[in-house]
Image (cartoon, rainbow, N blue to C red; front, top):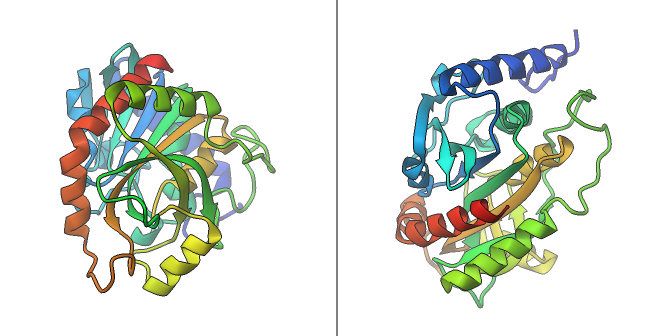
Length: 285
């Protein structure tokens, strides 16, 4: 029996657990597949409420699913129609800092693959590192940096999900990026483009860390998304990532205290335009 010694799933049981989760969702939604998945970050979850013909499933009811513990995350899966697509929207995600192992953090992404999804759109609330931008801006993620030691695909590989060694050169689908830029232009949104850096959290970064992040070439920093992108790339899901820049990162504006309430407040302020952008993109992909 092969175990992940850091609290994750037993490898030989992973496919079984994925099937159990996917089968339960299929029964609840009365469908055998979805077109894609959306992961909605802090303060952005209300977009799922606009789906038509939707089914709401609490995470706690889905076999093998973790439970979201973060304020601003409702902790439920909403499956329904968004334009011309059937999508599964996660109202809240799972984070490494909550104490979950990386393989549990990305488990829902793999379940989406089992539901025959072809794409996943990942959103997040991020700290703005680029001094020329401001809170409330939206940033199209063109690439990312991950310097943390852990990786969701660490340990024995499940060949039925993806390759042992897989390319990350084009983790963010170029066609999706172009569609997002075009739709943002049509909506009059000044969509930034930049690099997102993953740090584990839950503490916000220090000013010195933010200076280092900027030197390394990142425009935004956060505590999510990158593990999900890695898992999506592993199982050949196409990815689009968009950050809502909810606050200036530590030290950018001097001695300003950071807090999660600001993250949620800024997310709420931009939710309407953010939701419309996502809706338009889903229509075109």
